[in-house]
Image 1 (cartoon, rainbow, N blue to C red):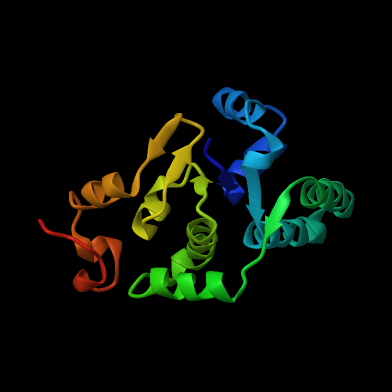
Image 2 (image 1 turned 120 degrees about the vertical axis):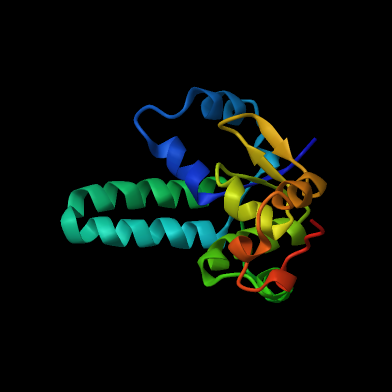
Length: 167
């Protein structure tokens, strides 16, 4: 039985008035012990609350209450020293736009979790197992490397040798 670390885009989907049907179906089939969140995801969601607060205080408070409930309902995994060291390994030679996704990927790797995310494009650069609940596709790290071989390495990372490629 796989255990999952829910990415921010997945959690945000659950908050929508009409979440994607495949996402709801998959999520409703999980046991609570299969679900974890990263402290990074809570931080990203809180940042969204703060942006909303500048425009609509009442809506921000509503979202923040939902966020509190979320934080109390699921296991929240911290970015501890072990995760930060794994993050540094993952970020070596990668663009800064991957900072938060790499923190989530590092947490997943340290705790041997599958990342549940729609964002295959960024997570494929971080050699972590990904499950896309929108398409019901599990992407294994070995497939991740073969997928990236079809692209120019320079487009995936700032230096060609920062990424495993043999094309």
